[in-house]
Length: 413
Image 1 (cartoon, helix red, strand yellow):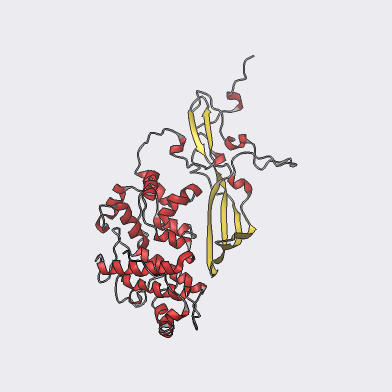
Image 2 (cartoon, one colour):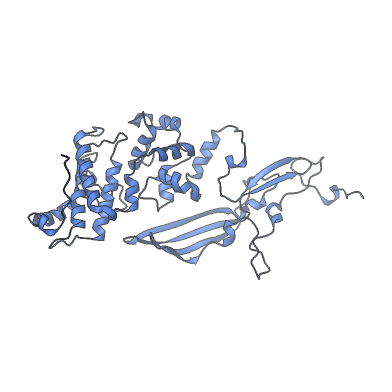
């Protein structure tokens, strides 16, 4: 005869003998958790680690508290003021996500000392987390589901196809700290959750991605980039890292422009033959300029946050000012400064973002003339303005000189 599991009973009669004791201990259970959303140990239930600093590593078994928290959240009984409490649900999600950050690449957890890979911690935390997930059911947020996902074969394939995970780079950069040399990708995913200084390769910065994209919090930053950020055109590393990478790079043979230009980004390809030099140059929107700015964001309540963004641009260092001599704007003066964006915003995960103030112009993100019906003026200058600084040279002219009107012969009849 096959054994079957009895359906779970959650009505008040089942918990009546224990409800007073459960409610009495709830403040104590919650006090063990770091409930500050933006703390680096957010969701940790080991108070001796995150608050008192008596230990130098978090014990995984303290995360078993999510079981009773989930039970109290989903079960209605007399005196239970925690039932369907939105704040409690947020704390449960934080605790579950922190539990995932403690897991080793082989699936194990620590209890008594770092890298212990305890059988008890692994078995018991998995059981109680499983019970918590059973209680929560559809109340489990999608971002928490993402955090609980493992490296599936499909995700591994996406990561390796992207080319952003470089095993040789990772091993050379973090060799002394790697705990699982048989699976370097899993080691990086696990370790970088608590150590954002670890990078998977030279062209992705874990810390930069987290600092730059504030909406990426409940999914691993590298997984987010491969799954979404790459296709959204999000920056993956700082300009300083690009410069350092290029300094150590040699000449590379390219098969097409797609080898160096991200898909979906508007560009202009300039070709010239001025009698002295024949060359091709790739530039971005002629209105793109050097810029800098600040952005501040603060949580208001639940899923609502707000803030302010200010962005300033220079007037002179524009790609449309390129010519044969100055092909990188390196010597351009900054010129006058202008406000590009200055606005306040209100953001909600469900409803999106509301901005008021001075936002960027539509011309800042397009690359081709767009005629607006009923208007005389185009939304951008004509195409020839993209290379209006290129000039004619005669064959005998020095490479750095421009031809005067007298140097250019009139065409023969």
